[in-house]
Image 1 (cartoon, rainbow, N blue to C red):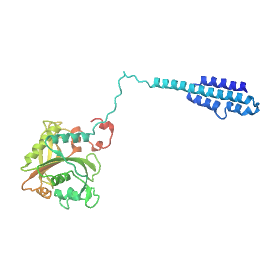
Image 2: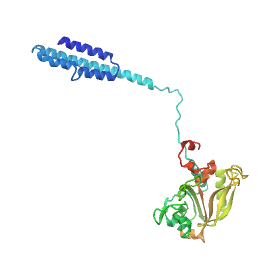
Image 3: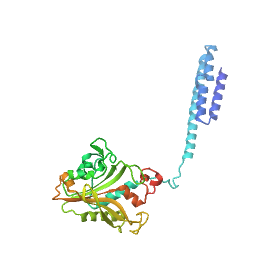
Image 4: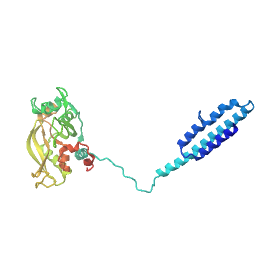
Amino acid sequence: MKEQLEAIKAQALKELEAASSAAELEQLRVNYLGKKSPLTAALKNMGSLTPEERPIVGQMANSIKAEIAEALDAAKEKIGQLELANKLEKEKIDVTLPSKKCACGKLHPLTKIQREMEEIFLGMGFSIAEGPEVETEYYNFTALNTPEFHPARDVQDTFYITDKVLLRSQTSTTQVHAMEENKPPIRVISPGRVYRSDAVDATHSPMFHQCEGLVIDKGITMSDLKGTLLLFAKQMFGEKTEIRFRPHHFPFTEPSCEVDVSCFVCGGKGCSVCKGEGWIEILGAGMVHPNVLRMSGIDPEEYSGFAFGMGIERIVMTKFGISDMRLLYENDVRFLSQF
């Protein structure tokens, strides 16, 4: 029995010394210290020994078991250190090498132009006003002097939630809130999303962005509107930019006009950007209609004002030479990274 136990010990220590991985050690633990190990089997045969031999052999078996366990722990520590050294060797970093550049995000062209517009008007003394995108029919149409049967009120043009609640079709709704909540003088812009029931194509989208501007004070005239828009155009498109007014009609302004800027690519000579005309339409404007002032609680006999509204997408497409509005919403990083 003693010779058998010594042979088991010698074989176990030899195999532990040769082991080279944690998986091998685990298998050796099962083979020599498990329930089906030869050491356990040898101990089960102690019944054939004399009473005098049993305690001697039992003590020897326990000593060998402890010695194998101790050798197993030592082998685990040794292999663990070797595996850690190999891992550190493979994962070492040369801190003297140039670092890898991180891919940084960029501002979306719509966000970039909107912020640029905001900075221009903030520099003129305007403040930024916000309004709800879900509006009532009163603020979207009635308070803006839009007749009851005007085509813009039709369900084919506007997204109605209920008969009296809708997604705003213009940021002009914010000017009504601004006039109701503030006393003149008022000088605000209100950039934001608007919604119209348009089919998606290169120049139309059911959701787009506008920037509305409003000034109310005593003695405001059309010349104040022209000076404000001329300064905006020069800062947005370049110092040589000129503007022109063309007569138009909007329910909430009187008189009304559409505003063009001279083509900043060809200087007004005619090119593909301005379609050979030398001018590019960018916004609509006019003097605030007396009815709009009156419905907002402002006396049109004492105060006057002007308002203007422009599509931010149109400014972006004009300034960056983008021919298809859909490119702005497809989130193609290859396209957006150009800006």
